[in-house]
Image (cartoon, rainbow over the protein chains, first blue to last red):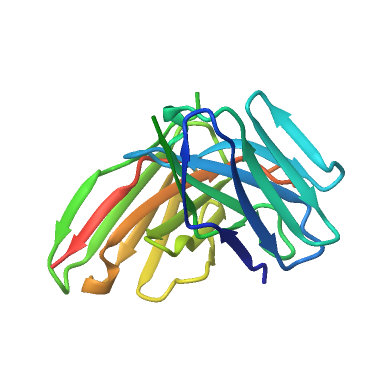
Length: 113
Length: 114
């Protein structure tokens, strides 16, 4: 089955700096890569996703890049703000199905003033 | 807005008790999921249901069972709770489009087994 590794486990940046979180996956057939944000006391929420037919996708201050050859994808947050502080999870589909996801172990991002 | 609700935010149970965690979604989604969240381990899938009365085991089904009698409701059952089942439990739902779909999560139930 799919194996997703996520780094780093914790990340502290100053407000206004950029943050990058990286994930690798094992199944070369995977074609959908979402990122979820979990704020304190809440369930995870989808913030951006990318499909294998594109290499990059942007939505305001967040972007995701995908390198299918190397089997890794990354989340980039620019001009970080205190409200970006949360736990972020990457995910990839279970082998052979698009309905189930394998999640990474999460990155706790702290944006300091 | 999609809404996924879980019956309890916090639950304390004793070892050996039978525990029911309930989840309800209001968007007519076919798929429903139960995850367990532990520090450093991320979200691990316990069970998945793709239709009423249909279920599949996830990565860590041991010690758990599920029930889906109605499309909107998915229950997680701990037949005999143990201390190693102390965790945060998250329910999610998603539609089925075949190409990767957003999962909508509930707020979670923090279960403590003493």
